[in-house]
Length: 313
Image (cartoon, rainbow, N blue to C red; front, side, top):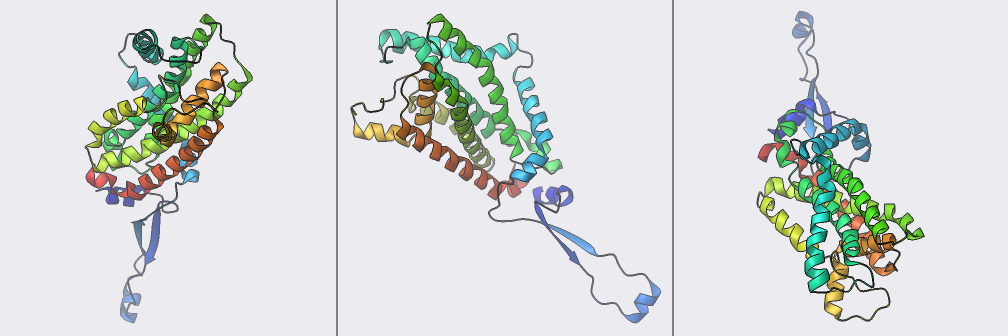
């Protein structure tokens, strides 16, 4: 029972409510014959909507670091190539898309070499897809940990997303090699790339926390998440070019559908900042707002239902 587990281990200050209950009045004879009973402490879990609890997450930052490093080691345990898979995965996808979309379909890239163009889009996308997929299954995979000890449950999906950051940093070296190979110089726009990746991180944290909570209650999401990720990739200008700022729109419906995707502006802006092409400020502003909203909604819903995890997991 999750409530019981939390009742015994939760710190009463932040995640629970504590009441002290007396056992009623005692007769004069009882007070003389025996000492008064100690007060009974009742620890009740909070219900309803709760704040995200950044202060408590910071308090457990060492646990977040431990779980993140555990996920990284487990992912590459007993593999021959180890962390090289962080580079090989987007590199192999780049090779496939370069053959079918670059050579056969001849997708417009604005004059950039297609392998470099598609890898600059696959790099942030692979991070997001890995983070959301792993975070979505993280709580279900931590059954024993959740039912035995109290800690902020949000740390579990957050650790899965943080482990994906490790892959992103490793794969970034491949992008630098491609830019040197195709002689594409770095520009001042590269300075905004960390900010764009931070917004992408917020989107992944919110989406991962939301899917993790839904996956506990509805195990159908275990099968929905891979399909959702694949569909989301083709709905995002990862392997094709998003409409440039000021360019004529070919279809109002398709263009607004792309704008509705919170990843459209982030991935297009990341690629533009790295390769030195114009950034669509309107799409970026929409995606930045959507990232903040998605983070808040995902984390708040996770906090809303986390008390029932150990009961139904």
